[in-house]
Length: 206
Image: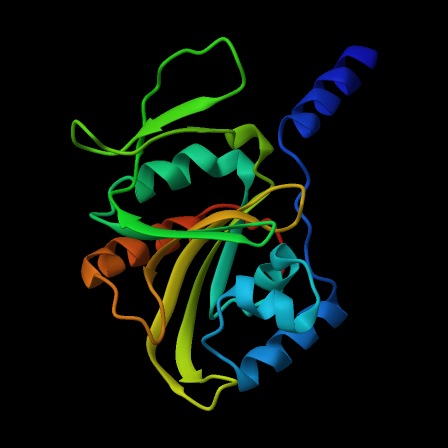
């Protein structure tokens, strides 16, 4: 009995707990998106004063799907098939945006907690990431619409966004961004990734 309990505890501790929107928060998120449908969650959180992970988990099933960090490898393997992505990192007010191939998991063995990823090419981006800290991964597909500045945002926002215990995004990979002229080559691959994520156990109810 004790051994079984310890094993169960270890399994639960292996993946950090995701934060999901309450029914009241989900209602507020959907009301916000009824007027600003194209806003990425990292923008919506500023207007709503909610953690970004709550915003993503509060979107309707028509526009989003989310899985636990335990499915990191399955999601990342799908992302690594994208021909290109637009990366957005918003860390404590420091925002970094760049376009490039998605780094693939190297599968090398390290003695620390990091996992290495590398983009294709001799000079491809190399990063050291922490899948064990990911609480949830959300894919969002948001229609264009009018922005708060009164300007129309054409197209759709399509992104796969990774969250940790801070409840804000670690980074997001965008296949398109409403109102922005991005490379559209990743859109079919995004649809494939989102379809895959819909087949996995959902981290939050919608």
